[in-house]
Structure formats: structure tokens, C-alpha cells
Length: 344
Ligand SMILES: Nc1ncnc2c1ncn2[C@@H]1O[C@H](COP(=O)(O)OP(=O)(O)O)[C@@H](O)[C@H]1O
Ligand SMILES: [Mg+2]
Image (tube, rainbow, N blue to C red; front, side):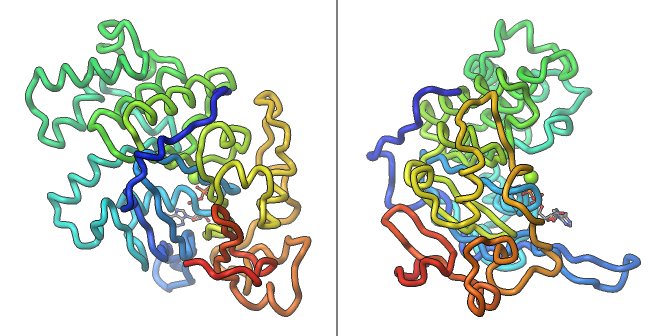
């Protein structure tokens, strides 16, 4: 496990967030017999947050709560049903084709499925060249320089040995280093890493997380680190967003969340993973009892209320809780905190 907690230099924080999402919704239409509309899977249902240059945020939540949908919507792979995404102050929905391409170059992506991530018929060299060709970097020397630099950074060395290799000739850890190299080759400002270590052995996990940490530091890279492995977030991120039922239900500085999680769901999660030992990884399978909500027919009120130990009858089961700013660096969408000021 990385031993030093990630620290962001305060001078790197700028007034304008690098990324802002506002009331983002992504619903998938479900059709019966391929024709009649049967309803919508509300995979993302009103998510808002801001992310600053060089900042690392972890997004945690059970499988199926909408983490990958959030990543893909930000990347433009899903069109939002409602809501806005701003990158460096610009509304993505107003960008033309050329500007969208520039945006995609500024946002690196490590997709969740590591097996589908790398084309089996391309060499390492070709895999790294491809994004440059697509983005108009055609100068051969520049291509070589970038490939060399990025392979050095992800420690796939000696470089000449790796260039002609195909993905199947690499170990799991090396493949993930290559995926990271490809995500970095266009020198992005933001990296979205969707469960980047969940398929790797425990020993390799630490190395890959340390690599991401180093890239973050060296390039003042903003990172959205998506995970259901809570034992890694405490070392990795400055802030944690906890997701449940397609919504963010708690946002907090990592330190504060670990000391005093506010939302009963986050409390249950971190109680069950209080052992920081990487060998004793616990996942969401253990906590809390009950089923995650249906996103086709979500329960009324707070989506967590059917599983909540502190449910207030007549309120939590009726009205959707807004976000309450409980302390300076901690907010939660939970009626238990209704006496605090309402956030955005
Ligand atoms: N393309 C899609 N079409 C229909 N439903 C989808 C699609 N992608 C995801 N979903 C559904 O949206 C919900 C959230 O999925 P996902 O974002 O992958 O969750 P997570 O990454 O947190 O495990 C799930 O119920 C999933 O089945
Ligand atoms: Mg996912």
C-alpha cells in the first residue's frame, strides 16, 4: 500500500474547477419485445460535483450503483438525459466536433474491463501510436519521443523489448501499465480510472496505485478513481464521494470521512472495512445487509431507507433528501442532518 497519503499543493488549486457536473442524469430506456417502452434504468440520477486541477477524488459504491455510467457520461460515451458537464469552464453540450476531440484528448480513461481494453492484434508501439494518429500528432520524431517518455514513466523497460510485443505477451500488471501509458500519451489534464486495480493481484495493486499517484504528482493530474475496494481510498484520494442508488450521498475530505462518516450507508461501509490491511480486503459483498435498490423502480424518498438503521418514518420513506453541508469539508444527502444548511 502506498505509505504516503497524497497531498495536493494548495497553490495548484485554481478558482475554476477543471470539471463540474450539474444535476447529471443518465437513464437507459428499457424496451419490451424490442418495441414497447417498459421503463428507464436510472443509472445516474442527479449527480453534481466539482473537481479541481491536480485533485484526486475516489468514488466508492456497490456494484451497480452507477459509477461506470458516471465515468462514461463524463467521457461523452453516454449522452446525459439531463444535466450539464463543464470542462475548464466550457459546457460540453456546446462544443463542436473539433472541440470535442480536443476535450477527449484532455481526459484519459482507464476502462473497467482490462481484457477488453487492449486490441490483441496490435503491438505495444502501435497501441501507443494510435491515439496520436487520431489526434493529428503525425510527426514521427514526436511520436517516438512521447512513446519513450510514457513507457519510461510507467516503467515498461527496457523500452525496445516492449515495443514489438503483443498484449498477450505481457503480465496482468504490465498490461495495466500499458493501459495507463495509452491513457497518458496525449498528456491529459484529467484521468478517469474505473476500478484500475480490481482485477490484479494484491502485490501488483500497490505498484499500480503508486504509479498513478506519481503521475498525479508529476503532471498535476486530476484523477477520478472509481473503486469498490475501500482499503485503497484512504491512501489515494483527497476527497471521497460515496454513491448509492445512482446518486452521490456523501462528499467529504478523506480524513474527515474516515474519522466520522455521516451517512448511515457510508458508516456501515467503513465500519466493515476498518481493517486497513491490504491482505484483509473486504468489499461491498459484506455490507450492509439487504439489497441495493432497483434503478428501474427506485424506492420513494431516500433510496437507502429500506436498509437504513436510522430511518425516520414519514420523512426518509417519502421525501428525497437534499444535500446538507454538515461541516466545511463534509456534506451528505441524509435527513438526519436536516438542521444543517442546505448545500447546492
Ligand atoms: N448501456 C446500458 N443499458 C442499460 N442499462 C445499463 C447500461 N449500462 C449500465 N446499465 C445499468 O445501470 C446501472 C448502473 O451500472 P454501472 O454504471 O455499470 O454501475 P457500477 O459501475 O457502479 O457497477 C446498472 O443497473 C446497470 O445494469
Ligand atoms: Mg463499474
